[in-house]
Each structure stands twice: as C-alpha cells, then as structure tokens.
Length: 431
Image (cartoon, rainbow, N blue to C red):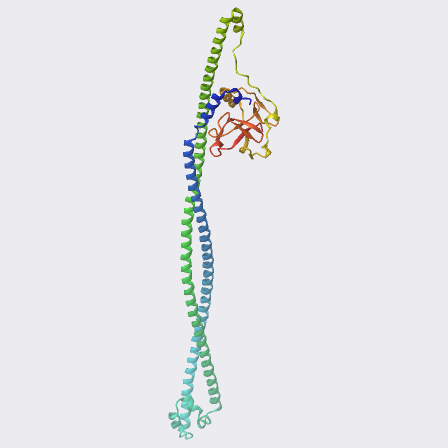
C-alpha cells in the first residue's frame, strides 16, 4: 500500500485508529434531540393547522349557505310587503266603493221616503174623494209601504207615472243591494288576504331574524378559527426557525468536533512518529555499537568499513499516477458522475464537492503523508493512488481507506453532512 499506511509503521496506524474513536459527538446528539423535539412540535402544529383549515372551510360554507338563504328570505319579505301594499290599495279602493254604494243606497232610501210621502198624499186624495175607502185600512194593515204598493187594488189606482217610478225605484234598490253585497264580499276577501300575508310576513320575519343570528354565529366562529389558524401558522414558522437554528448549531458542533478530532489525530500522529523515531534511533545505536565491537576485533580495516556504513532510513513514499490503479477492484455497481450527483456506492451513499484542497493536503502532510496531490483525467482529486473523500471522522478517521465507486479512497476531510448522514462519502472532484 502506498501513501499513509505504507509510510507509517504499525504503532502510528494504531494511534490514528484510536484517535478516531473518541468522536461520539455528545453535543451534536443533544442538539439532534432538540431538533427532533422541534420537528415533532412543528408536525403537531401542522396537523392542528390542517384541521383548523378544514373547520374554516366548513364554517365558510355554512355561512355562505345561510347568507344565501337570508337573501332569499329578504326577497320573499320584499315581495310580501309589496303584495301587502297592493292589497291595502285595493282594500282602500273597495272601502271607497263600499262607502259610495252605501251612500247610493241611502239616497235610494231617501227617495223611497219621498216617494212614500207622495204616494201617501195621492192615496189620501183618492180616499177623500171616495174612490178608495179601504185604502187606509190596507195601508195600515200592510207590513211596509212596498207591500202596500204591490196590492193590485192600490196599484191600479196609481197613474202610469207612479207605476214607472215604482219600477225604477225597485230596480235601483235591487241593483244597489247586489252591488253592496259584491263590494262587501270583495272587501272581506281582501281582508282575508291581508291577514294571510301579514301572517306569512311574520313567519318569514322570524326566519330572517333566526337566519341572521345563524350568520352572525358562523361569522364569529369563523373569526375564532381563523385567529387560531393564524396562531398555529405562527407557531409552525417559529418551530421552523428554531429547527433551522438548531441545524446550524449542529453543523457548528460537528465542525468543532471535527477540528478537535483533527487536532487529536495530529497530536497522536506526532507522538507516534516521535516514538518510532526513538525506536529507530535506538536500533541504529545498537547496530552501531555492534559494528564498533566488530571493528575493534578485526582491526583498522574493519573500523573503516563500519564508518562507511549508512544509517537506515524509511522507504520514500511512492506517488501513483495511474488512473487504472485507482479504479481497480471488483465493484460493478453505479458510478458517481456530475450528472448523477448522488448514488449508492459500495460503502454507502456518495455525493461530490469541489473546493481548494490545499488546506486538506496540509493536514495530511502534518500527519506524515507525503503522497502526491493530483487530479485524475475524469476530474477526481487524488492523493497518491487514492481518491480523496470526506466522511464522518468519528466513523471513518482521517487516513482510513474505503471503497468508492470511483476506486479505493482515503479519508482526508469531513463536512456538515456528517451529523445527519454518518456513513455518507463526499468525493473531491473538480466538477
């Protein structure tokens, strides 16, 4: 293996693995609990808001129906009032007609009295002249003057003029009486219609009053529900703002934890390097002492040979620039591309990012890695023969090797995604 694992001995690799194990992110977990609580409150408020909207729709429909019914009742009330006005006019006209007929009847009765007096005078004349000795007895024995006139014995004694006047008088009285009956009947019919209309108007007025009250109650309830819905919407917005703030806080906590993890890794690496250097120095000193003893035993030539022997040094790091080497392996699934954007790779979900990697390379250098940083022809950023990836450092510490869809990768970085997606890989590219 080239790069970090080849360069670092076993003690240093163990130190790196230990350094990655501390990052359980208790602060981020606590913040996630707050986020979950805020999400639950938001979800409950959204459910109540939807229920309130249903109630608002129902109340609005009832209010609209009641207003429509109220308008219909008002139209009926207007028609009835117009009908009553018309009936009142007809009743007034009928009363005037009735008064006229009564006056005509009174005039006819007055004429009857005049005719009766004139007839009485003529009968008296007839009686005094001896032509009707029984006329007075007939007059006093008759029920009324008309009966008297109808007696043939008396009618025959009247002049043709008197008979004509009598006939006209009888016809007039009969006509007036019939007309009086008709007017009276018409007046009674109009009065009955008035009573029915008034009763109907009172009934509709009661409906108008009760419906108007219903409309007001619906309006009051609607206003209450709308106010409640507005409060719920404000609560939803408040919870969303709280969630956004908590997500930002969680990202800051992850970043802080990553920085602490990186610092601990750097310290652990430096300590491990120092320990390995001390071991190598001790081994070199031991070898030098052995050579010195051998030289003393073999003479000056041995001393010269020992003096010329070089001190062992670690093998240099080999930078692999072969793209085929980086992408080798048995993986045959989906491959991350700029067009795909997000896939499920051999080690979990994969995305990509493009940023200046100088800071990341510097961190890796501080950890002892000397592999060449370069960009593959397909745009993948490489450290030696490994694809550079960002991951959750508490799960996959820096320097860890992991399979990706684009070849074997090395963890060199992390990001805010790590809190919510601990197994996600973010692959460095120039896309």
